[in-house]
Image (cartoon, rainbow, N blue to C red; front, side, top):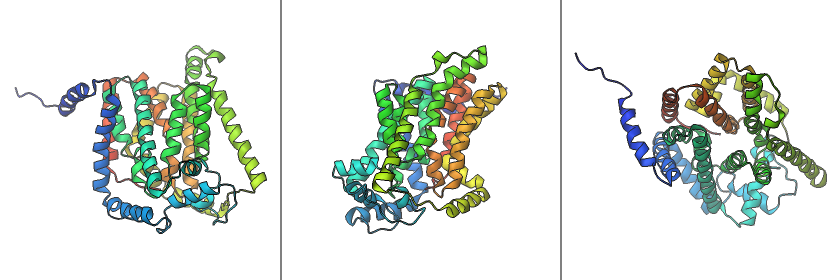
Length: 379
């Protein structure tokens, strides 16, 4: 009788090689290097316009700051040199929205950066972000090969690739990195520091800090669902730090408005138009943000529904729902959706605790392959 073949055989052979390759003290370097080799090559090959036009324009912007329209590196540098003088920008424009996004401009001013060195710093911050993500994911999954599969998919979507592939000057690597560090550390002062840095990068960071709060509530929710007891001691004090940080941000922002007359010119009609347009292309707008990595979040929702963990399901759905709503209100939907990347960590924890490792492995492989096959889209 002929022996039946298995489609999983190549992955079993691959895992044997990967386990040996990652079995070292500096495994994070190897995970990031291999994941980026795969994802970056794929993105640059299948998005040739980014190489042919985007990076050519970035080079011209480095040589002649402000020359290329739609590039914001020079605007960041100018804002850092004069951050508290009101400027007249068209309502709803990216420049107008930058008014209270002060972290990166002040860093550029303090370090005397030009366009080239600011982009270089973004590359370094992006690598630090991925390093932090690798450690967080491995801490959840306790498996370096699974961490590699996740990182390969993650670096194939905007959230993990923006640090080099977004040449326009949105500088999203900075808030993403600071959000990840606020999630990673438990020291109250570090949480306060990194949350403040992320909030002053982009106000969407404060909205998506709800995922950090939900993560800290998970032990309390799990105990309530299983034992029907409210054990308040299981609520991490770090939640209070996040709340204080959010209040501090809002208070200082209000003070800046009153003292320096800084403001953001909102265009309500533009937001309404964006909402209805986004609803008309809902599938496209939402899918292209997280691509195949949606499978991880969708699987987590399915597990919570099947296991009747309703409180966790409602809170997780609420946090994801807020991110989706903000995504529909703005033109840069891919960027807005990517600010919710911490949802992946919560989903991975749910899946790791609920399904066999083999099922999780195939889910991560499929989500990575789908993400690698789709062209990246931003903003």
